[in-house]
Length: 111
Length: 111
Image 1: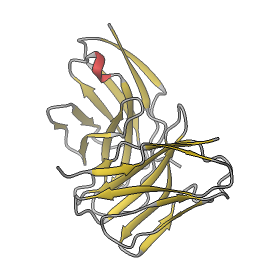
Image 2: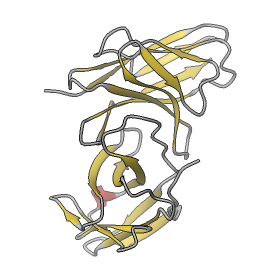
Image 3: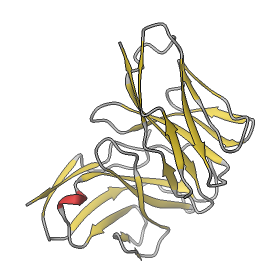
Image 4: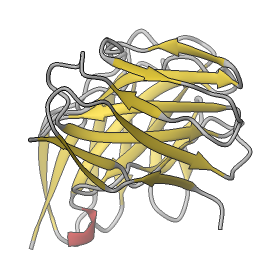
């Protein structure tokens, strides 16, 4: 079973910040949180990852709660091209074992 | 450019036939993965390989087989024992920092 839970779908107005939550209440101390997105009929694309500190890159920001049981992916100025399914997973960074995806969140950007 | 190459992109199969999906990477990654995706669903792990000449079953391995004779290649065979093989198949490899790099996928349709 997936170790993360996400809402099945969300809407966001174009130009606004999209905040996508992820619950990972059973995360272990050495597991990182990774986010991916999948545009229809393409392979998923890596967005960002973090351990316990907040992270930012050119695509998004990742906010991880202090207890590490949940996180939020923030797309600061959503565009129609951000319409996709977003997946949150947890894994140990340098151990290549089973990587389980949940069903993700389908994000609809509204014009 | 480095990346994951999957072929063919589209494949049609008659019932009772085995088919092999190709996955090649030039990223020098040790670990590789095969996922299956059904319409509107998340990714389900079929097989994964942490190193050459070694692989492990994922959650839905029945009816599938793999080999890992070379670091760069991780082909997936969909056998006639797979009762419902029509799906979108995704191959990925894992970097040392834990990001997964996905191919563009292979869409298999059983006629």
